[in-house]
Image 1: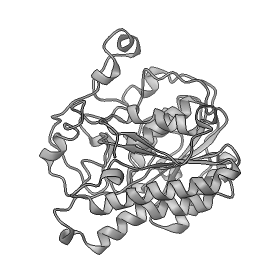
Image 2: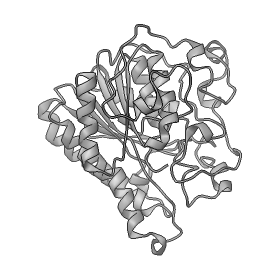
Image 3: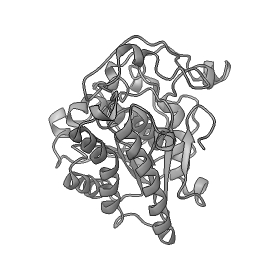
Amino acid sequence: MAQSNKTSNAGSNAVGSTSDRLNPDAPAQEKRPGAEPPPEAIANAQATPRPDKAQLQGQSPQVLNEPKPPFPQQHQGKFGLESEMNPRPQYMAPLYKAAGKLAGKVALITGGDSGIGRAVANLYGKEGADVAIVFLPSEISDAQETQRAVEASGRRCLLIPGDLTDAKFCTEAIERTVRELGKLDILVSNAAYQNRTESLADLTEDEFDTTFKTNIYAYFWLCKAALKHLKPGGAIIATSSETGLEGSKKLPAYSATKGAINAFTKVLAMELAEKGIRVNAVAPGPVWTPLNPADQGATPKKISEFGKDTMFKRPAQPEEIAPAYVFLASDADSSFISGIVLEEMGKTTAG
Protein backbone atom coordinates (compact mmCIF):
# COMPACT_ATOMS: atom_id res chain seq x y z
CA MET A 1 0.00 0.00 0.00
CA ALA A 2 1.51 3.18 -1.01
CA GLN A 3 0.39 5.14 1.91
CA SER A 4 -0.52 3.04 4.85
CA ASN A 5 -3.84 4.70 4.31
CA LYS A 6 -6.24 1.79 3.93
CA THR A 7 -9.68 0.82 5.25
CA SER A 8 -12.82 -0.99 3.99
CA ASN A 9 -16.06 -0.70 2.06
CA ALA A 10 -18.64 2.04 2.43
CA GLY A 11 -22.09 1.57 3.93
CA SER A 12 -25.42 3.17 4.72
CA ASN A 13 -24.30 4.61 8.05
CA ALA A 14 -21.84 7.01 6.43
CA VAL A 15 -22.74 10.66 6.99
CA GLY A 16 -22.83 12.72 3.81
CA SER A 17 -21.96 11.74 0.26
CA THR A 18 -18.62 10.61 -1.08
CA SER A 19 -18.28 13.88 -2.91
CA ASP A 20 -18.86 15.75 0.35
CA ARG A 21 -16.04 13.83 2.00
CA LEU A 22 -13.65 14.56 -0.83
CA ASN A 23 -14.36 18.26 -0.44
CA PRO A 24 -11.68 19.84 1.78
CA ASP A 25 -14.26 22.41 2.95
CA ALA A 26 -16.87 19.86 4.01
CA PRO A 27 -17.74 20.30 7.71
CA ALA A 28 -16.94 17.75 10.37
CA GLN A 29 -19.79 15.58 11.60
CA GLU A 30 -21.68 16.42 14.77
CA LYS A 31 -20.62 14.54 17.88
CA ARG A 32 -23.09 11.85 18.86
CA PRO A 33 -23.63 10.41 22.33
CA GLY A 34 -22.82 6.81 23.10
CA ALA A 35 -19.96 4.63 24.23
CA GLU A 36 -19.93 1.02 23.11
CA PRO A 37 -20.39 0.39 19.37
CA PRO A 38 -23.62 -1.51 18.69
CA PRO A 39 -22.81 -4.81 16.93
CA GLU A 40 -25.19 -4.03 14.06
CA ALA A 41 -23.25 -0.83 13.25
CA ILE A 42 -20.24 -2.85 12.27
CA ALA A 43 -21.87 -6.12 11.26
CA ASN A 44 -19.98 -6.33 7.99
CA ALA A 45 -16.71 -4.92 9.26
CA GLN A 46 -14.98 -8.25 9.79
CA ALA A 47 -15.43 -10.88 7.11
CA THR A 48 -13.36 -13.55 8.91
CA PRO A 49 -15.62 -15.67 11.18
CA ARG A 50 -14.61 -15.43 14.82
CA PRO A 51 -16.17 -15.91 18.26
CA ASP A 52 -18.02 -12.98 19.82
CA LYS A 53 -16.68 -11.21 22.89
CA ALA A 54 -18.37 -13.51 25.41
CA GLN A 55 -17.17 -16.62 23.61
CA LEU A 56 -13.63 -15.27 23.37
CA GLN A 57 -13.53 -14.61 27.11
CA GLY A 58 -14.46 -18.22 27.79
CA GLN A 59 -12.11 -19.78 25.28
CA SER A 60 -8.44 -19.81 24.47
CA PRO A 61 -6.66 -16.43 24.51
CA GLN A 62 -6.51 -14.01 21.61
CA VAL A 63 -2.92 -14.98 20.83
CA LEU A 64 -4.24 -18.37 19.67
CA ASN A 65 -7.38 -17.11 17.93
CA GLU A 66 -6.01 -14.88 15.16
CA PRO A 67 -5.84 -16.10 11.53
CA LYS A 68 -2.78 -18.08 10.47
CA PRO A 69 -1.24 -18.61 7.04
CA PRO A 70 -1.35 -19.96 4.47
CA PHE A 71 -3.88 -17.37 3.32
CA PRO A 72 -5.47 -17.40 -0.14
CA GLN A 73 -3.02 -16.24 -2.79
CA GLN A 74 -3.77 -12.63 -3.70
CA HIS A 75 -2.29 -9.45 -5.06
CA GLN A 76 -3.56 -5.89 -5.45
CA GLY A 77 -2.54 -2.77 -7.32
CA LYS A 78 -0.11 -0.20 -6.00
CA PHE A 79 -2.64 1.22 -3.57
CA GLY A 80 -4.35 -1.72 -1.87
CA LEU A 81 -7.74 -1.82 -0.16
CA GLU A 82 -8.49 -3.63 3.07
CA SER A 83 -11.97 -4.46 1.81
CA GLU A 84 -10.43 -6.63 -0.92
CA MET A 85 -8.18 -8.68 1.37
CA ASN A 86 -8.85 -12.31 2.27
CA PRO A 87 -8.99 -12.78 5.18
CA ARG A 88 -9.96 -9.28 6.24
CA PRO A 89 -7.60 -7.77 8.82
CA GLN A 90 -8.98 -7.82 12.36
CA TYR A 91 -9.30 -4.37 13.93
CA MET A 92 -12.37 -4.31 16.21
CA ALA A 93 -10.50 -5.62 19.30
CA PRO A 94 -13.53 -7.26 20.99
CA LEU A 95 -11.61 -8.01 24.19
CA TYR A 96 -10.28 -4.46 24.60
CA LYS A 97 -11.72 -2.63 27.62
CA ALA A 98 -11.81 1.13 27.20
CA ALA A 99 -11.27 3.35 30.23
CA GLY A 100 -11.68 6.91 28.93
CA LYS A 101 -7.92 7.35 28.64
CA LEU A 102 -8.20 9.83 25.76
CA ALA A 103 -11.47 11.51 26.72
CA GLY A 104 -11.80 14.92 25.09
CA LYS A 105 -8.65 14.52 23.01
CA VAL A 106 -8.27 15.10 19.27
CA ALA A 107 -5.98 12.90 17.18
CA LEU A 108 -4.80 13.03 13.58
CA ILE A 109 -3.85 9.63 12.14
CA THR A 110 -2.27 9.27 8.72
CA GLY A 111 -3.05 6.02 6.97
CA GLY A 112 -6.10 5.83 9.22
CA ASP A 113 -8.32 4.27 6.61
CA SER A 114 -6.97 0.75 7.08
CA GLY A 115 -4.45 -1.55 8.73
CA ILE A 116 -2.81 -0.33 11.91
CA GLY A 117 -4.15 3.19 11.38
CA ARG A 118 -7.75 1.98 11.30
CA ALA A 119 -7.28 -0.15 14.41
CA VAL A 120 -5.73 2.83 16.22
CA ALA A 121 -8.58 5.12 15.15
CA ASN A 122 -11.09 2.57 16.41
CA LEU A 123 -9.46 2.33 19.85
CA TYR A 124 -8.99 6.10 20.10
CA GLY A 125 -12.72 6.47 19.50
CA LYS A 126 -13.46 3.89 22.19
CA GLU A 127 -11.19 5.83 24.56
CA GLY A 128 -13.12 9.06 23.96
CA ALA A 129 -11.08 10.90 21.31
CA ASP A 130 -12.29 12.61 18.17
CA VAL A 131 -10.23 11.51 15.19
CA ALA A 132 -9.15 12.86 11.81
CA ILE A 133 -7.75 10.37 9.33
CA VAL A 134 -5.62 11.01 6.24
CA PHE A 135 -5.82 8.67 3.25
CA LEU A 136 -5.51 8.62 -0.52
CA PRO A 137 -8.67 9.61 -2.45
CA SER A 138 -8.79 6.12 -4.01
CA GLU A 139 -9.17 4.68 -0.51
CA ILE A 140 -12.41 6.50 0.33
CA SER A 141 -14.40 3.27 0.74
CA ASP A 142 -11.92 2.00 3.30
CA ALA A 143 -11.90 5.38 5.07
CA GLN A 144 -15.68 5.32 5.41
CA GLU A 145 -15.53 2.03 7.30
CA THR A 146 -13.06 3.54 9.75
CA GLN A 147 -15.39 6.49 10.09
CA ARG A 148 -18.32 4.22 10.93
CA ALA A 149 -16.30 2.39 13.58
CA VAL A 150 -15.25 5.64 15.28
CA GLU A 151 -18.72 7.14 15.10
CA ALA A 152 -20.19 3.96 16.61
CA SER A 153 -18.31 4.93 19.77
CA GLY A 154 -20.04 8.32 19.75
CA ARG A 155 -17.01 10.27 18.51
CA ARG A 156 -16.38 12.36 15.43
CA CYS A 157 -14.24 11.13 12.55
CA LEU A 158 -13.07 13.69 10.01
CA LEU A 159 -11.99 12.34 6.61
CA ILE A 160 -9.06 14.14 4.93
CA PRO A 161 -8.13 12.70 1.52
CA GLY A 162 -4.84 13.72 -0.07
CA ASP A 163 -1.22 12.97 -0.89
CA LEU A 164 1.28 13.03 1.97
CA THR A 165 4.21 13.43 -0.43
CA ASP A 166 3.02 17.05 -0.83
CA ALA A 167 4.34 19.31 1.95
CA LYS A 168 1.47 21.77 1.54
CA PHE A 169 -1.09 19.01 1.99
CA CYS A 170 0.61 17.84 5.20
CA THR A 171 0.31 21.34 6.62
CA GLU A 172 -3.30 21.66 5.49
CA ALA A 173 -4.20 18.31 7.08
CA ILE A 174 -2.98 19.62 10.44
CA GLU A 175 -4.73 22.95 10.02
CA ARG A 176 -8.01 21.39 8.90
CA THR A 177 -8.00 19.07 11.92
CA VAL A 178 -7.61 22.03 14.27
CA ARG A 179 -10.15 24.11 12.35
CA GLU A 180 -12.88 21.45 12.33
CA LEU A 181 -12.21 19.47 15.50
CA GLY A 182 -11.06 22.41 17.62
CA LYS A 183 -7.50 21.42 18.55
CA LEU A 184 -4.78 18.78 18.18
CA ASP A 185 -3.50 16.64 21.04
CA ILE A 186 -2.11 13.54 19.31
CA LEU A 187 -0.33 13.12 15.98
CA VAL A 188 0.09 9.58 14.65
CA SER A 189 2.34 9.45 11.59
CA ASN A 190 1.49 5.99 10.33
CA ALA A 191 1.16 6.09 6.53
CA ALA A 192 3.84 4.18 4.65
CA TYR A 193 4.96 3.02 1.24
CA GLN A 194 7.02 -0.04 0.37
CA ASN A 195 7.97 -2.19 -2.62
CA ARG A 196 10.37 -5.10 -2.62
CA THR A 197 13.25 -5.21 -5.10
CA GLU A 198 15.54 -8.11 -5.91
CA SER A 199 18.66 -5.96 -5.66
CA LEU A 200 19.84 -2.38 -5.26
CA ALA A 201 20.29 -2.27 -9.04
CA ASP A 202 16.52 -2.70 -9.41
CA LEU A 203 15.68 0.19 -7.07
CA THR A 204 14.91 3.27 -9.17
CA GLU A 205 15.51 6.83 -8.03
CA ASP A 206 11.79 7.57 -8.37
CA GLU A 207 10.91 4.60 -6.15
CA PHE A 208 13.52 5.64 -3.60
CA ASP A 209 12.21 9.21 -3.62
CA THR A 210 8.56 8.15 -3.24
CA THR A 211 9.42 5.92 -0.30
CA PHE A 212 11.29 8.69 1.50
CA LYS A 213 8.68 11.34 0.72
CA THR A 214 5.85 9.17 2.07
CA ASN A 215 7.57 7.65 5.09
CA ILE A 216 9.96 10.24 6.52
CA TYR A 217 9.42 13.57 4.76
CA ALA A 218 5.71 13.45 5.61
CA TYR A 219 6.58 12.73 9.26
CA PHE A 220 8.88 15.77 9.25
CA TRP A 221 6.32 18.04 7.56
CA LEU A 222 3.49 16.94 9.83
CA CYS A 223 5.54 17.47 12.98
CA LYS A 224 6.59 20.97 11.90
CA ALA A 225 2.98 21.93 11.25
CA ALA A 226 1.71 20.30 14.46
CA LEU A 227 4.15 21.91 16.88
CA LYS A 228 2.36 25.25 17.04
CA HIS A 229 -0.84 23.46 18.08
CA LEU A 230 0.37 20.75 20.47
CA LYS A 231 0.18 21.67 24.15
CA PRO A 232 1.86 20.13 27.22
CA GLY A 233 0.57 16.58 27.56
CA GLY A 234 0.49 16.20 23.77
CA ALA A 235 1.95 13.18 22.03
CA ILE A 236 3.52 12.33 18.69
CA ILE A 237 3.68 8.66 17.67
CA ALA A 238 5.30 7.30 14.52
CA THR A 239 4.97 3.87 12.99
CA SER A 240 8.41 2.39 12.51
CA SER A 241 9.15 -1.25 11.66
CA GLU A 242 11.38 -4.15 12.53
CA THR A 243 13.15 -3.32 9.26
CA GLY A 244 14.30 -0.03 10.77
CA LEU A 245 16.09 -1.97 13.50
CA GLU A 246 17.35 -5.00 11.60
CA GLY A 247 17.09 -4.10 7.92
CA SER A 248 15.48 -6.21 5.21
CA LYS A 249 17.44 -7.45 2.22
CA LYS A 250 14.71 -6.74 -0.34
CA LEU A 251 13.43 -3.53 1.24
CA PRO A 252 16.43 -1.18 1.20
CA ALA A 253 14.51 2.09 0.78
CA TYR A 254 11.74 1.15 3.21
CA SER A 255 14.23 -0.05 5.82
CA ALA A 256 16.24 3.15 5.48
CA THR A 257 13.16 5.32 6.04
CA LYS A 258 12.17 3.36 9.12
CA GLY A 259 15.66 3.76 10.55
CA ALA A 260 15.38 7.48 9.88
CA ILE A 261 12.03 7.56 11.67
CA ASN A 262 13.64 5.99 14.75
CA ALA A 263 16.45 8.54 14.87
CA PHE A 264 14.17 11.50 14.16
CA THR A 265 11.80 10.33 16.90
CA LYS A 266 14.60 10.27 19.47
CA VAL A 267 15.93 13.70 18.48
CA LEU A 268 12.47 15.26 18.52
CA ALA A 269 11.78 13.71 21.93
CA MET A 270 14.88 15.45 23.30
CA GLU A 271 13.77 18.81 21.90
CA LEU A 272 10.15 18.66 23.03
CA ALA A 273 10.60 17.23 26.53
CA GLU A 274 10.81 20.67 28.10
CA LYS A 275 7.49 21.55 26.46
CA GLY A 276 5.80 18.51 27.95
CA ILE A 277 5.27 16.84 24.57
CA ARG A 278 6.30 13.20 24.26
CA VAL A 279 7.51 11.58 21.02
CA ASN A 280 7.72 7.82 20.52
CA ALA A 281 7.63 5.19 17.79
CA VAL A 282 6.16 1.71 17.48
CA ALA A 283 8.10 -0.93 15.53
CA PRO A 284 5.82 -3.77 14.45
CA GLY A 285 6.92 -6.98 12.84
CA PRO A 286 4.72 -8.57 10.17
CA VAL A 287 1.15 -7.20 10.36
CA TRP A 288 -1.69 -8.27 8.07
CA THR A 289 -2.57 -5.00 6.29
CA PRO A 290 -3.05 -3.78 2.68
CA LEU A 291 0.65 -2.90 2.60
CA ASN A 292 1.31 -6.60 1.93
CA PRO A 293 -0.87 -7.43 -1.13
CA ALA A 294 -0.10 -3.97 -2.55
CA ASP A 295 3.66 -4.63 -2.52
CA GLN A 296 4.43 -4.86 -6.24
CA GLY A 297 7.58 -6.87 -5.56
CA ALA A 298 5.79 -9.60 -3.61
CA THR A 299 4.32 -12.66 -5.35
CA PRO A 300 0.83 -13.98 -4.49
CA LYS A 301 2.48 -17.06 -2.97
CA LYS A 302 4.75 -14.92 -0.80
CA ILE A 303 1.75 -12.92 0.38
CA SER A 304 -0.14 -16.11 1.26
CA GLU A 305 2.71 -17.13 3.58
CA PHE A 306 3.15 -13.72 5.16
CA GLY A 307 4.11 -13.83 8.84
CA LYS A 308 4.73 -17.58 9.06
CA ASP A 309 8.26 -17.07 10.40
CA THR A 310 7.28 -15.27 13.62
CA MET A 311 7.33 -17.24 16.86
CA PHE A 312 3.53 -17.39 16.65
CA LYS A 313 3.67 -18.74 13.06
CA ARG A 314 1.43 -15.92 11.83
CA PRO A 315 1.38 -12.16 11.27
CA ALA A 316 -0.02 -9.80 13.86
CA GLN A 317 -3.49 -8.43 13.33
CA PRO A 318 -3.93 -4.64 13.56
CA GLU A 319 -6.05 -5.00 16.71
CA GLU A 320 -3.03 -6.54 18.47
CA ILE A 321 -0.74 -3.63 17.61
CA ALA A 322 -3.10 -0.73 18.26
CA PRO A 323 -3.19 -0.80 22.10
CA ALA A 324 0.45 0.33 22.15
CA TYR A 325 -0.66 3.56 20.46
CA VAL A 326 -3.22 4.12 23.21
CA PHE A 327 -0.55 3.52 25.84
CA LEU A 328 1.87 5.99 24.24
CA ALA A 329 -0.86 8.61 23.70
CA SER A 330 -2.16 8.43 27.27
CA ASP A 331 -0.49 10.86 29.66
CA ALA A 332 -1.77 8.76 32.56
CA ASP A 333 -0.03 5.64 31.28
CA SER A 334 3.22 6.83 29.74
CA SER A 335 4.00 10.32 31.03
CA PHE A 336 7.65 9.38 31.70
CA ILE A 337 8.17 7.64 28.37
CA SER A 338 9.60 9.55 25.42
CA GLY A 339 12.14 8.78 22.71
CA ILE A 340 11.55 5.04 22.66
CA VAL A 341 10.96 2.61 19.79
CA LEU A 342 8.46 0.11 21.18
CA GLU A 343 8.94 -3.28 19.53
CA GLU A 344 5.91 -5.43 18.66
CA MET A 345 7.61 -7.89 16.38
CA GLY A 346 6.36 -11.34 17.31
CA LYS A 347 9.89 -12.36 18.29
CA THR A 348 12.62 -11.46 20.73
CA THR A 349 13.77 -7.85 20.78
CA ALA A 350 16.29 -6.54 18.28
CA GLY A 351 19.94 -6.02 19.19
